[in-house]
Structure formats: structure tokens, C-alpha cells
Image (cartoon, rainbow, N blue to C red):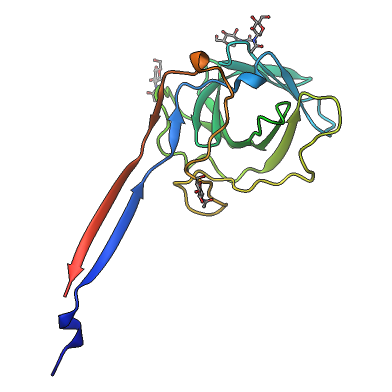
Length: 200
Ligand SMILES: *[C@@H]1O[C@H](CO)[C@@H](O)[C@H](O)[C@H]1NC(C)=O
Ligand SMILES: *[C@@H]1O[C@H](CO)[C@@H](O)[C@H](O)[C@H]1NC(C)=O
Ligand SMILES: *[C@@H]1O[C@H](CO)[C@@H](O)[C@H](O)[C@H]1NC(C)=O
Ligand SMILES: *[C@@H]1O[C@H](CO)[C@@H](O)[C@H](O)[C@H]1NC(C)=O
């Protein structure tokens, strides 16, 4: 019997993305945040986030006390903070529009511990979870330009699976720094495997 299939060649293209966007480690906060204190908008807590002049550290907390958190790693639009001299971290998405420089839309807090961590995290999925909270940080005393109530278009790194909405691999946190102040340690974990499998 004539087998139609035998006269055709089928190609199955399998494109496997082994990719986790661009990672900056150690990282620096955007230049427009430096030397500034942001407050949480519309909250009864006096939470504040102050960024150092060099962009490497920040003081974060409320009226009961603030702690020194450094910029540990930025992957895509996810910021990982590390508590100074501790194994304590936070990972959350940032939505920052440099044309609204005094407002930061962020998730929070996804606190986690990693003992004696030295290098960059490569798998963010176990701890960059769907944020429990959404925060509008503002350094401007006036009414915010960011639309309220807050929402985030996505809340998980591109390499992760649901729950949550995965972000675009090409997402970044805009730095708006003069070229000379850009950090030097930027690299990407991107690799693509393309397999072509002929059938006949
Ligand atoms: C932050 O303040 C320091 C000290 O006043 C100053 O030298 C530096 O240029 C400022 N940096 C930014 C980004 O405003
Ligand atoms: C936070 O810690 C860093 C590193 O030790 C230090 O350089 C910086 O001055 C500290 N920031 C504040 C506000 O204490
Ligand atoms: C972490 O570092 C401390 C101090 O060097 C060491 O005593 C401890 O065993 C380390 N812990 C792990 C889990 O490697
Ligand atoms: C991801 O970003 C790229 C470049 O901006 C864009 O072309 C693409 O449509 C985006 N993908 C999604 C799923 O948003």
C-alpha cells in the first residue's frame, strides 16, 4: 500500500532556550536613585529606602530601624539585595521608567537565606517568587504619576515557570548612567540549542 508519508520529509525544529537574560553582578543601583531617599507611598509605616552616592548600597527600613542592603545582583528586571555581612537576601521585580525618575514600582519581599554565598545566583526561580506586596516608592512629595492601584505586568524571571507571569528575557532595570559609571561586570547566561530532526 502506498504510504504517503514516505514521500515527504518532515522536519521538526526544536528550539531550546537555555537562557536567563542579562545579569549584573555585583550590581549598582540606577544613577537617578543615588543620593536620594524614597518613601513608600500611602502607608502608615514610615518605610524609607536611601541610596548611597556610589550606587552600591542602600539603607532600607522603617522608623524602628534601617539596615544596610547592598545591590547584590540584577538579572533582567529582578533586583537581589543582600543584608550587609549576612546571608540574608531579597529578590523582587522592579518597574522603573527613567522618564518618571522619582518613582519606583516594586514587588516585595521574597526574603531568603543563602549561606556563604559568593558568586551570582544562576537559578532565580526558587526565591524570586510572585511578590506578596506591591510598593510604590517615591522621592517626590507630590501625587504620583504612576497609575494606581499598582499592578505589575509580570512578576517572575523569564526562565521560571508559573505560578506567576514570566517577564521578558530582554527586560532590564534602566540605569540612565553616563557610560563611564557603568559597572564592568556584565554578562549573559544565554545559550541556544537548535536541533533539526528529519523524518521520512
Ligand atoms: C551624590 O552626592 C555626592 C556627595 O555630595 C556627590 O559627590 C555625587 O556627585 C552625588 N551623586 C549623584 C549621582 O548625585
Ligand atoms: C553600608 O555598607 C557599606 C559596605 O560596608 C558601606 O560602605 C556603606 O557606607 C554602608 N552604608 C551606610 C549608609 O552605612
Ligand atoms: C560558612 O562560612 C563560615 C565561616 O567561614 C564557616 O564556619 C561555615 O562552615 C560556612 N558554612 C557553610 C555551610 O559552608
Ligand atoms: C520581549 O521583548 C522583545 C524586545 O523588546 C519584544 O520584541 C518581544 O515581543 C517581547 N516579548 C514578550 C513576550 O513580551
